[in-house]
Every structure is written in C-alpha cells, then in structure tokens.
Image 1: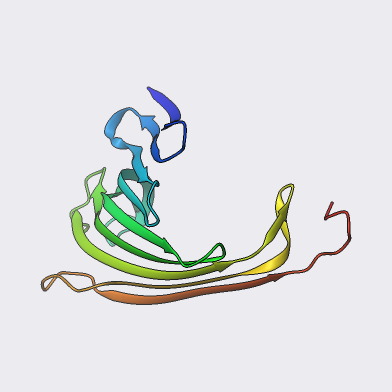
Image 2: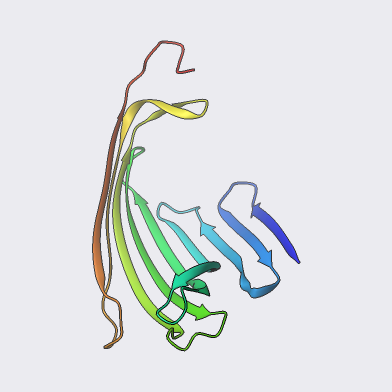
Length: 178
C-alpha cells in the first residue's frame, strides 16, 4: 500500500491555514506525515507543525558489509515571525526533535538508537527581490540564522550553528529574464 496526498485549507481571508502532507508506505512507522497550522491575522504570524519522516539506508557495519536500517525523524515545532516592514522580519522558532535508527535485519554489532533534541532558533530575513515568472530578476536577499541544541544528558547531542545567505540579483533586460 502506497499513496501521497497534500491538502491545504484556508478561510476566505487567509488568516487561518491548515496543511496536511502524507506519503504513506505500508504503515505509519514507515510513512511521512506533516500537519501544519498557521495563524496569520495579527502582526506577528504564528505557525505550528507536527511531523514524522522515515528513510531506509544501508549502513556500514563491522559484522556484515552493510545492514539495512530505518532512520526516523519525528517531533513538533512552533514559530513566530515579526515583520519590521515590507522587506525585513525577525523570526523565532522552537523545535522538539526525535531521531532514531532501527536495524531491519539481524546484526549484533549495530544497536538501535534514539536521541532527542530541543532546538531554539532565531533568524533575520531581508528580501527586496523582484520576481518575474519563475525567478528573481533584481534586488537582493539576506538570511541569517542562529540555531542550536543544548546537550541533554550524557548521551545527548549538543550543537550550535550560524547560517547565512546573501544574494544580489541583476536585471538583464527591460522585458525581464527569459
């Protein structure tokens, strides 16, 4: 049994949005799900997500050459976006993420693992790009994000990441870019 669906519902003004995406493969443990709700009528936009993904990978193992394993990510997240003006905004986010590796064939050298992460994030976004058909043709974009996860317990995973992206678009002709 396999199937894919994407459904989006909204009120007439677009103040409330509900999105459901699924990729069903046999049962819920092997399938992908995303349920998202966005609350948009106020100045600060709010969003909430719940998700589950599963992928199948051959993993190198000391006992066998490769062991077939299932990697899963599951959790929930929330975000708030505060626009300063038409072109810039500040975003805050919070995610609770579970990750697991489960072996799908017998291999005593490889153990099943599950880790949990709490990941707060903050971003600044500036975007004054002008679009034409499928791509931007002028303006620019700036994206800076600080993301991290404190180490929870002895077996926890802790990290901090700073990401950035700066782009400048140039208009090549008066008619647009073909």
